[in-house]
Image 1 (cartoon, helix red, strand yellow):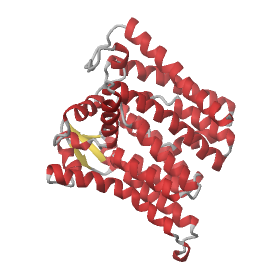
Image 2: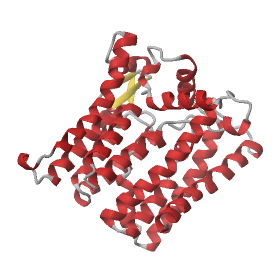
Image 3: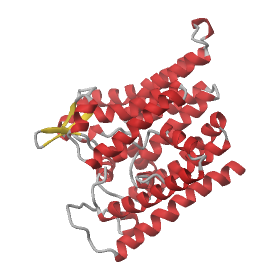
Image 4: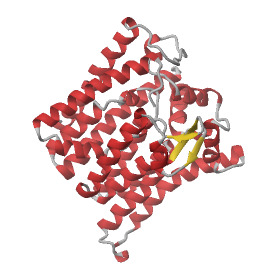
Amino acid sequence: MAVFKRVFLCYLLHYLVIIPAALITYFWLPDFPGPTATMEVTSSWFLNLWTRYDSGWYYDIIKSGYTAKSVAFFPLYPFTVKLFSRLLDVHPVAVGLIISNLAFFGLLWFLYKLVQREFGTGAAQKATLYYALFPTGIFFSAMYTESMFMFFVLGAFYFAGERKWTAAGLMGGLAALTRNLGVYLFISLGYLYLKQADFRLRNFKLNSFALGLIPLGLAVYMLYLHVHFNDAFAFVHAQKYWNRELVFPLAALVNSGIKESGPSIVFLSLLLVAVFRLPPHYWIYYAFMLLIPMSMGVKWEGEIRLFAMLRYILPCFPAMIILAKWGRFKSLNYSILTLFICGLVFFTALFVKGFFIA
């Protein structure tokens, strides 16, 4: 019960920041200069506040199915929303927001339990609070896949640490069905399994086969694409519609503005710290979650640049563990909280006004 209360407090604080910020922005702040895009897909202005940009792609997939371009978005989130929308006869946006926000609580619970087990209660409280108040955490509460994906990722890490490999593999497989990066859990959790087996083949058990559920999640989507598009790798080939190209991460970094390069540099720095301060399965996962998006640059005005890094850094939860370790110093803890809360208010306002954040 104590864990539930602590996690729920972090969960509640998230909404005590974003809801007032969203309402004040919507009702009282003037429109900001610059290109914007809002969605009016329901009769509820409040529900519409939390649907922007990629939300529209998920809504189109739910209503009309996949196209050659939209196959870049993995299927579990829109499939789940469509299923419950039909079963409950509720608008897909309402269902999508319910799923995202329930998953948000779940991921915070898994994060707390995970960090508490390995780093102590103090670190768990801070890591969970920092993640709940992360500046671009608005995506956890919007009609996006971030909450569902991180619920499965953190669940996989938690169960793997408990040596419950069937549950860990299932959660990893569902993560791989939710986002294209989910399949890389196979490598980080595979290392953890090897470590638990003392890197000896004779210590392997039948539960090692549960790791195969992770790539199986990707394989299920590839089978669907083969059947419906005659191209199992359609999600890869769809990247051309988004002007994405594979590049060396630092090559895209040097061509990008502060909006993309700033968070990338900060999280690259925290990754280097993680290599020396965290167990390898954490920083291996962290490296994939950060470096692969940095390697998929977008061609813009003749240059390959980083894109949407303010959102793509959200899966890098080991960074919150590093910050939690530093947060034992009161002045640094207050500084992190102040920066994060101000950032969350700022990005919530931009999101509500329809600016592209990430």
